[in-house]
Length: 196
View (tube, rainbow, N blue to C red):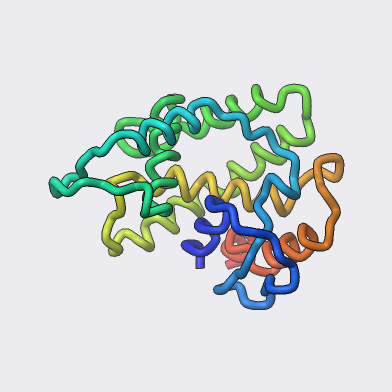
């Protein structure tokens, strides 16, 4: 299920409410992209730089095969997130994320918006262990692009939580956005794991 969530949070789909199916948590069709419903800052220079670098370099993976990140969007987004976390010092050499540094970054980014700062920090705290468990559940799958999926999984979870808890002042109250939020609330893995 979370693989689908990761895909729709990371890849922009067209918005068409008629074909959007929020009744099945396993199959979302045509979801709204987060930033089109919740006005979050998205000018991240590290992500832009990592994306440009990854798409322009024909590097090889650990098996000596040439990586084609242009055709593998899941691997591309995992590699962008890993690159961004490394660049900013959030990803430590042992593969863990420096959540304190990430939290400080969110607080600094949203220093003029205490509501959004609080939502970001709360989302990070809700997602840290959840994302780690999700990545561990999928360790049996072949690795794509030789990149660490934890940063991308963590970011996807944070963005879903921000979407669900978006402050009223940042929320675009359209039927598409309401439908997407309804889907995310109904299918919220993070909340359902806390209840267990």
